[in-house]
Image 1 (cartoon, helix red, strand yellow):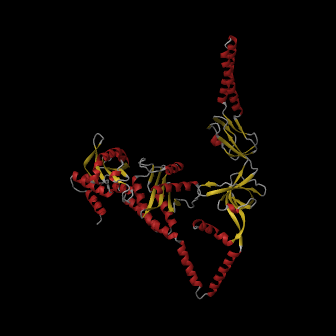
Image 2 (cartoon, rainbow, N blue to C red; image 1 turned 180 degrees about the vertical axis):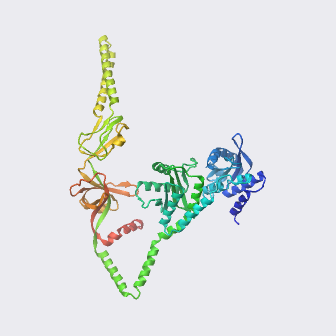
Image 3 (cartoon, rainbow, N blue to C red; image 1 turned 90 degrees about the vertical axis):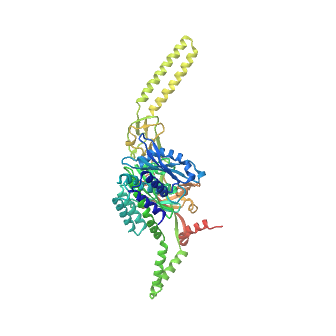
Length: 617
């Protein structure tokens, strides 16, 4: 029997043992230290006045007992959090001289007489000492936290075990459904849907490690994943944050000072308005292979839910890895299918063999001796230079808005009225200042106080300048359209009554005239494009309609875009007249004619270029 099994049997025997209190605590503490591989451990009891004291001798290796006083201070600091959450931990004092690379003080609340925890275990551990994950130590200690209550009261009044009948049944049902799947993606979809329904999560998603990145595989109750959407990209950033640290991340976190980076989790939870967010790394044979992220729009994750989620994800990971490996090697199954087909062709049916050979020969001749029109793909968007940005003329409030987004407006049409009440008051005040300072200047001139007269004259000019500025603002309080067009940004519902600062963008007004196409072409294809080349544009709003365009200009400077590399901007004009349904900002895909190329070159040039870039000397 292994040492781990012996420790568990000993701890289970302590639940209803008849040992005296001192002997029970000594046995319980020593076996708990062995269970979590702690280098130092101690039991602390809460006193009547609210303080905490050590109970009995400490358990640990001789060279580490000198750190007992510091460990007790950590225990007192962690006591309140351990009472509220069941456990708490924080980085311990630097102990490089003791051989501990990442020392952590861990406190686990115990219940000995019912009610709130009135005792706790405090351990000193080294998170870098073993391959077992730190969260597993917490799970182990939480599962034995009810032993003192069983020993002293004869019944289990502590934490409800995670392995209750209902929880175990739920876990078994989830595992059974996953084991019935024979495809990796279907298994992932089943997993996220079951977790979302059984744990009342607003969304559960799973990401799998593919090379250096973690890609989204399945999202609960979502059939199609748009990988270019901002939500999916943010979700992948959450996966990678948990995977890179190989750490479970929970929001709201019980210990914000544990050193775990969770910036992407906080941003994602804020954008999704989640009340709780949990990321669980999936590990197989000591390596991270994926991440499961659970979201709740209401409430938080209870301790028993966390333990059950850890149990389910750890159990399904090996099966998911096997399915992923089986699905990944499609080439081997394809080779086997080709071998079977060739066996049939080379059998008694020589007609099929000849037909296959003939078709293959014709295909090779066509590939090597004929050509296709080679077209370069590019992302395209309609743009215009006739765009006006209308901003707030001064600090104030918006009194009335006359247009909505999409409305057609005429030149000098009033779009918005600023509140003028305060400006009228300031105008009256400035006019009064001008009159007052003018009288002071005249009075000083009459008595011969020329210095005071000059000061008053300067104040008159200052007041007049302020009055002119206020009247200038009054003249600009009505925001007008500079030309005929339509409003593409700025809505009455959002602007009405809103406070604005000078320079804040209020409206964007655009004209339909002079529309052009702005395309983004990868640097690997830019050499094949020439000015004047023909092209076709397909917009997302009408994918069945091809619009002829012509390349006018290629910007010689590349721009770096995330996930796409260096991209060149290519400007193109329309061959025909603009259609009335075109609008600036419409996007689609363009295919630019780059001339004729051999079919073999078109089919193979990507692979050849890759080999040339990676295997040259």
